[in-house]
Image (tube, rainbow, N blue to C red; front, side, top):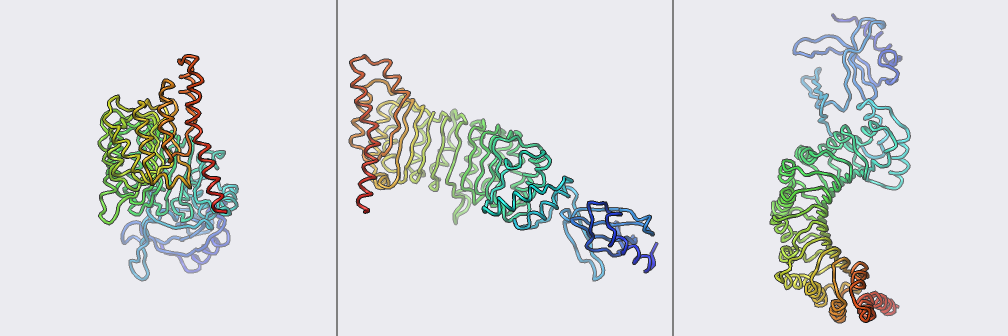
Length: 493
């Protein structure tokens, strides 16, 4: 039934001046009040009072001020589309489930966006959160939102805090370290991945992520054609899921801006590792004009057994790689030297602790060739790797012949760590010291404490002094580094 103009005016004035009576104390103001004809089904229009309040839209029904009540309300972020049907008619589509609308809100507007999301998730607005963002994050130009900074709040308080990243162009990273993330917060994180055009960094370390997180992550990436993720760190979460990594492998080529991926200590099987590396390989080869430029790959702590074909293929073409960490994977190093010769020449940090070397001498010459060719090596680690003396000698001789590393070592520290390799007798240290005499590349060699202790236990007493002399020859490389720097400093003066 239609209402008279005076009735409409009376109801509109009442809502405009006393919105809290009808809408509740939470909605203490109303930005717009007018009478409209509404049709939930075609051609069945009925008169309603249309109210736009802070973050919400209301439709009121009633003929008098005392009978007015809320018929329907929805949050502005649930608006999917507004379509102009005629000059005097519009159609509003809403989605109460997954929100489709993309809104950019800068950090300077974070207080308002946070307040809007508090209303959306029906959580209390906390002034301290806005204060932290404005006085700490904005003042120090911090673009990575750390969940750790708000871990003292209730778990559901994190929903609007994390949700801000869905719409923010200021926050470009999300970090959570060693905090168990509730399932509803994980849902919000997945929404961020699904919607954000500005998320460059996602670091969720040791967060007890669900085992199917990789599947959920893949789905979210699939629904975001404009994703700009550069750093992905999911280390120290149990993520072994063949189905999930099958989906992840197919979606990885879309992450064309990915620079770093860290899945250390994720209990991944050979199959999952191969699927991961296959996806990265496809990401680098999919685009003829230049695909993914991966600079850091960390697979540490995931036990590799037999099939490493995909890892080898990836390393053979990944010329952008600067940091490679395969520590504690048990991978057979003899199998990767050839691929590193082709794709790993630019590596700066090579961590191969806890890996395996065959007792045969098949890979010795290839290893020597790689270390003689590497251009930018600054740090190498073979800790806890049982390395035959011939192998270690070949590595050192390769470095000794490397003029590129020698040139760069005049300005940077080049180190190699060989501790806990069961080097054995003092005679081995004699061979090592002999190799070091002609090596002008290394500038630092940590004292192999565990091996030294082991040798002292088994060497005759009359050789202890001899052994001590040999190992001192090795570690005196530190003096060489200091003198070299001093000389360069003198030349610059």
